[in-house]
Length: 120
Image 1: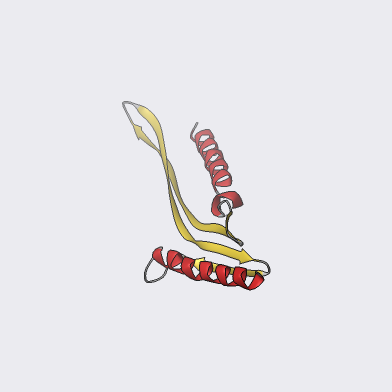
Image 2 (image 1 turned 90 degrees about the vertical axis):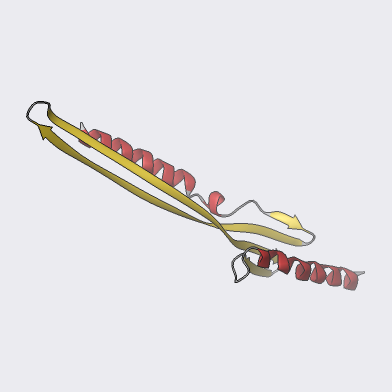
């Protein structure tokens, strides 16, 4: 009985990991900002634990038991930003946190507008 439970549990955990750790989960849906293509990138962590055992009591006999737990963590890492052949990674983590990514937006927009003016 105990071996069957553990095999089923392991199968369910494996299916969950395969489902949650696809590239589409870690790399977000791209979006366009002017001539720039932006793709969000996240970090995902998974922690798993399981255990089982059996105890016996002379009045109740043998009693198996088991348990399992899992934890997930998702954290934004930054954005891949591309224009033409240029690709740059803008991290969301710095001493200022996610605001550093937003601080880069004026620079990107300024570059975009400057290039647009030169084309006209």
